[in-house]
Amino acid sequence: MTRNLGETRLKRRRRACDPMQSFDALPAPVRGWLAEAALPWSPTSARRIWESACARGLSEPDALAVLSDAERRLLSKDHERSEAGRA
Image 1 (tube, rainbow, N blue to C red):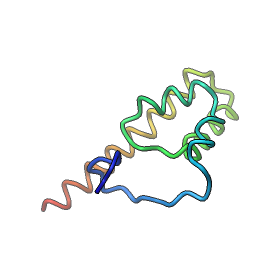
Image 2 (cartoon, rainbow, N blue to C red):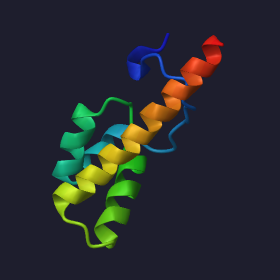
Image 3 (cartoon, helix red, strand yellow):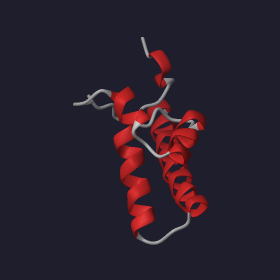
Image 4 (cartoon, one colour):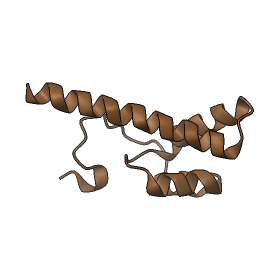
């Protein structure tokens, strides 16, 4: 059973903390982005990318764009693995 993970071949990881509590502690823009994300991101991963972008002095929209770019790269990687699995 894949639940809400969909048909991805990306590596899954166990969480050491309560994901809902971690989600609730995120800044509102990141929570909104996660609600629309194509992949099942962990709050920890999203926070790490967000904080890294903010530490570089990026604005809120630019930091959200960094999250979207990271997701685009992962989707591309997942697509490559799917194609390799079919060969």
